[in-house]
Length: 195
Image (cartoon, rainbow, N blue to C red):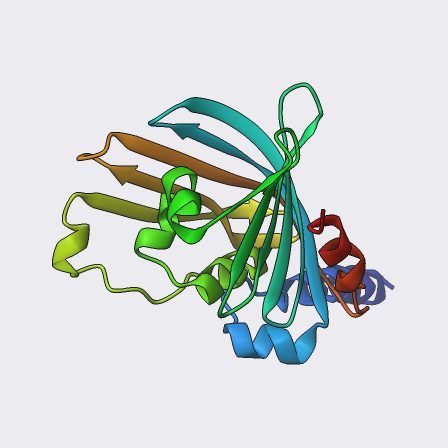
């Protein structure tokens, strides 16, 4: 009788452990795209440099496209950002204007060292490959940190960017990331970027 109780106890414990142990935040981007259709989540971005700001953000991503919506401390939608492998579009919701690439780099300098599709990889939870030894990036530090996020034990949850020459600092803290098996209607978000 005691053996039977111990057997069921061990069986019950191992069943739960096995389910969560298969969740891996260290899958490749291509593996994630094969396993899931979309990814969504939210976080906080702290910025200091040309100006000082703290905004929350929500994101939706499907395949190689990502839509981000930034909100200020008052809860107002401030920026909408659409990223594809070849193009980035940003709309300022308060001033009702669009920005060109050079203007975008001013407030999102991560794009000085990362490619556009690297931003999509990051929202999916993958640390991108980038040229850290590029002489143009000598003054830049980019650090990716992993920690528990939802059911993932070692998820990409924090990015720190520091440029000592321009005195710009960015901290991106992911609060939630969910990979989904449903498609997202990104056309609906694309319409928000139009005037």
